[in-house]
Image (cartoon, rainbow, N blue to C red; front, side, top):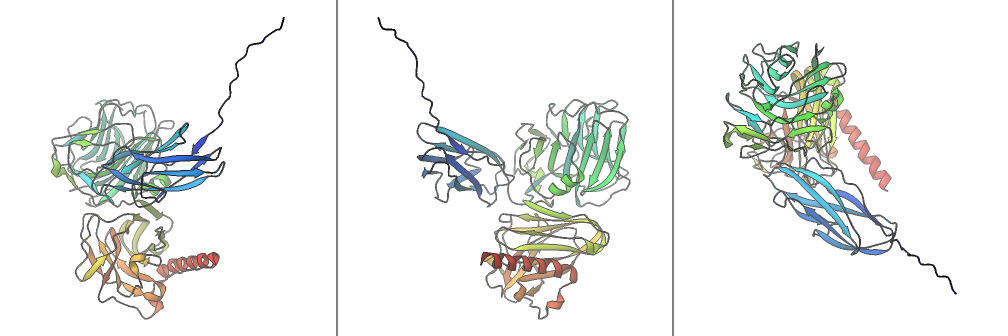
Length: 504
């Protein structure tokens, strides 16, 4: 008699495919997405990139193939580096899911990320006319917890109640209002329990406002353009529950006549540095965001929440004419300098991926800081100034000085910019903001240093690009540089020389 043992034999397939995590994207500008794919065995893999909304994000180009799908034979345990580019709608606005699929036939994995699509620059804003508001629903919860709220705002007049944010319900510490009182101080109130700025403001320029509340300490803060302007310890926690309104107080008895752009609601306390770092640029989805509104619509009565939390707003008593071109100082990248005392202490530079760079420095006035930003796509207006044959439509820069009566100088080092050519007919063009037309600028051209320089600019903010005309102003002496502009340009030139030497 022979004994027999019955058993099951299981063979596990250990083959794996890995796609690198891809960070969410703040703007669908012309910057390629980088990713890697790896396999545990030599194998042929089909890679595909898919857009959840081809009307907003289309023409997926994977690995420079010109197609959304490619086939690659991969070597085991060797990462394959790929790029992904796409085209975005010039006027569309929304949140798009991009999925990268890797399929071997018997195994498939995906990696997803989000792209926020908006027109270039600050694009659009929303204007309120005294009896209009946006209702974002009753599920934005701020009670008994820390939060921050920030936005760009432009008053149309002074001396009136201009509350831009309302939340909760009437009652002690249950009603949140944020905005101006008729005394022209900016308030952050929990009903009758509030904090205000120590200064009054009557100008009608665009400014960035941020308020923060720390529930543990009950500390409240108000920031204007990244500078602390008021703070206190609240007598009580904020207890409000109810609708979140834009353009009206929570009780709906004080309506705004103002403009708003780029509203962010956070579930944490933003630091002053975080506020300064992001106030002049669009941001990517973040897990700390409760809601994020860019206001970049052309029409309709829905305000899209880009955070992914679906706190979409409904416009009331408004028409398509309330969507207007924004004048806020917003780009895709930004840099800043808030350290100094005299105007000349404030200087900051930012560079484009192709190698050109832009510097701004304080000339005169009372400075608290200076912000510059880069818009990494074509401007919304393409008509060259009178006397110019063209302007650079690849990217442009903006400056936002923070202070009283500031003037500043700029230097545009165009080395590496293919539009510039040999530079012999090059000039700068400028506009006041995203809503303005381009105007010619009589800057000083230092061809040997591939730089254009302009000083004594007095507007609160400006945007700048390269242009070509028939009669550029050419300087003969390098000494015409002001010292504060010369130093950043020399640093840029030295940096470029070091890179060239390293490449050799």
